[in-house]
Length: 252
Image 1 (tube, rainbow, N blue to C red):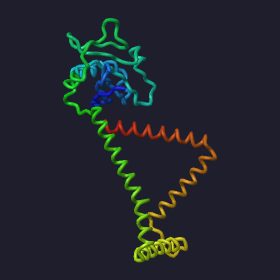
Image 2: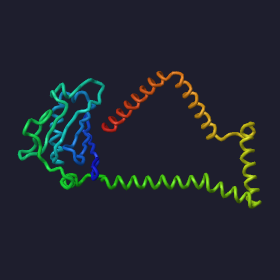
Image 3: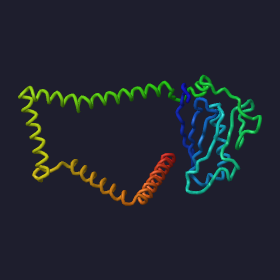
Image 4: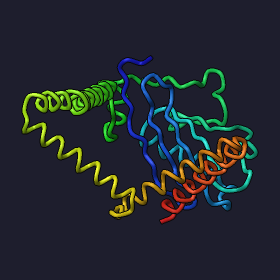
């Protein structure tokens, strides 16, 4: 486990017919990652040139080793390997500009670039980041919030009822108030059950929702294979809707 890491925020940019997602070098990693997300089929013929062009753009902006991969967001079965013979493009800045190759680096051509924490802080000086210390502080705040919630629940469910019970036993006024409250809640529920008091819209909606949940749960138990199939179909549908929504946001 890396004890002292820094994670720089990803960058996403629109292009015509595709968009790119850049993931900066993470602590102790050897390269950044660029995903070219193609959603227009007519770009498949140009995808090799697109990848090489994007590699040059991003290495010029952030001079680190970079891996470029293609994500096909269309309904076709296109694969970059069918065009280049490889699944990814690698590159890095050198004295002559940018060196790149499809697939693994040839022997002796591996990059030798300083990717220390200090070096990356200069390269990514314009990108917001989160450190391991930030993450630990966030976890500590969540733990404090959970502890505070537990204390509140203990007070509300245990301590306060105990105090009220003691005062009710020792103080006739408190005892009378507790009795009146109990009678009020009991009569309110009785009137609802007898139909004398109409339930609120919120109560009716909640009861309908609870009945539907019980109904669905019952039939899911009767047909677990059908439930699993439906679950997979829903997950696929949600994934497709997210993808289409993402594409539309990139087109606009």
